[in-house]
Image 1: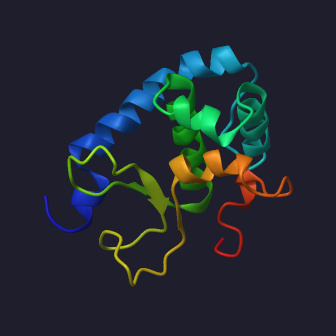
Image 2 (image 1 turned 180 degrees about the horizontal axis):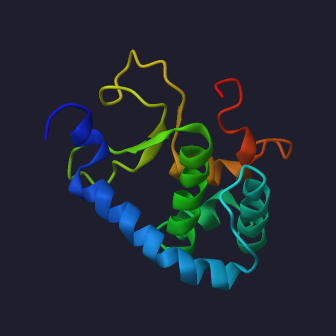
Length: 144
């Protein structure tokens, strides 16, 4: 793999996306309701997260749980499906490198990149650190 493919189609990213997609049916049943990948559904996602966790520390402690991992995937998928964003992950085996979404482009992320981007593993826990008027639906406000 070379160029953008290594960022968008590396085995670690592809496997993570497939795992979350497969786990989504059980997650949806557990959380309840219909999840339609619309921007409006991000308000329900935020509510489900706030109902389950009370602090940044609590959600960070549960970060590797199926609930949180699928929530991260769902958040990203909403932007992918509604705003033509793409999933990327650094083409390394470093467990600290997590999937993120970014506007379409020809190569991986670099310091000069001006495409809209956000990382679910940053954006979702930050709900507990930001002003209560900051919402998941606003994650890429000003970009989209």
